Image (cartoon, rainbow, N blue to C red; front, side, top):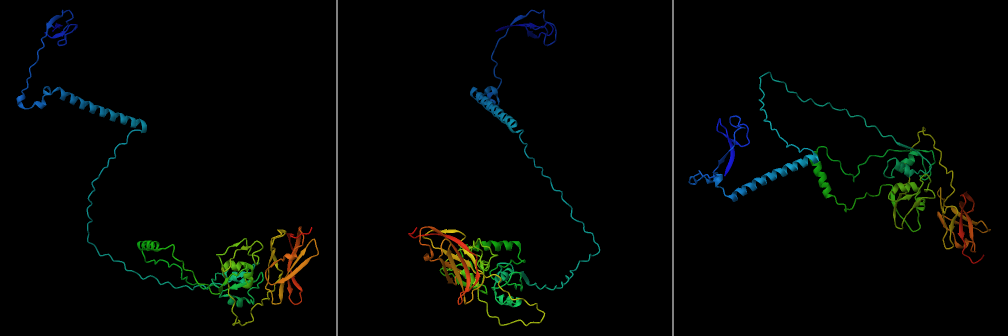
Length: 436
């Protein structure tokens, strides 16, 4: 093989055929004519002696397959580096620069030197001084409860409202206020009730001892929760003194029970909180015409027990203010049901109900009077109950509707003279006869 070269005349260096300056000495060789030089390519003999046992260090001794394997490993490493760099770039573009790793610097604690003990004079230690003894103060005597009677109040309700849990205090209250009949008190009268004596409830949960630490208290609370049985029967207290049970009989109502035991709707409501008194106005003796109390036969109701006969009468000292005898100002019955102009079909039963404002004497009766407005028929009947069922014979014998006026009065059973007459009310009754 031959090639054209320029030989520098100064340093005899071989330059390319187009070179203008010698690369070795810098002489100008632009005018030198290139000459052709034959180059013999001969295989250079290996100068490495394989007998030395170091063939793994000679690159020329590697086979072609090993050379390809090394090239593949290098290419794989380069590809992994490229993928890692690409992932880091995408993370920077998406959420900002990656967080740098947390570097924890551990400081070697400085060893503190111990305190130096310097001998000195002894220090006086403090002694415990006895705490000053507190002088007990006088316990103030609780003042009596004073209540002014308003419309609809009862003596039972006033006693319970002053904090008493039973009616055993009633004779004392009656003697203290000069009351002869507990069912007769007048509006504006001032009732003085002694304060109740504090008692310990046997069913109350005892308070935890302050000497117990927090861990003991928590352990006891956990044991109490584990021992709690939601299906265990609940202990109920016995009937309080001054009260008794009344078993409801067929036909009895809240009003008749209140009359029998000389109380009112508010008194029964206070003694029986589990019974619902719906739409009751307790400013009225028996809750008003809208008062509704659902009672079932054989149901037990708490009522005031009869007041025992008074044996001790306080001795007058001459300084007492005379209390006028309470007299009823209005004893006319209060009509309750049915409301004004209530319509009854021909096959319906008409029941008239009212409320007595006082207790009937042995010779008194309630007289019910029913009169048809479009006829001359007038009927009356006497009863000691607080209701009356109108007989079907009192209805006009035709198919038309008729309006009836009814009222209730208190009369003397012997003479028949009316003492207290209620207001008038009306109802409409459909006739069931065959006439016109």
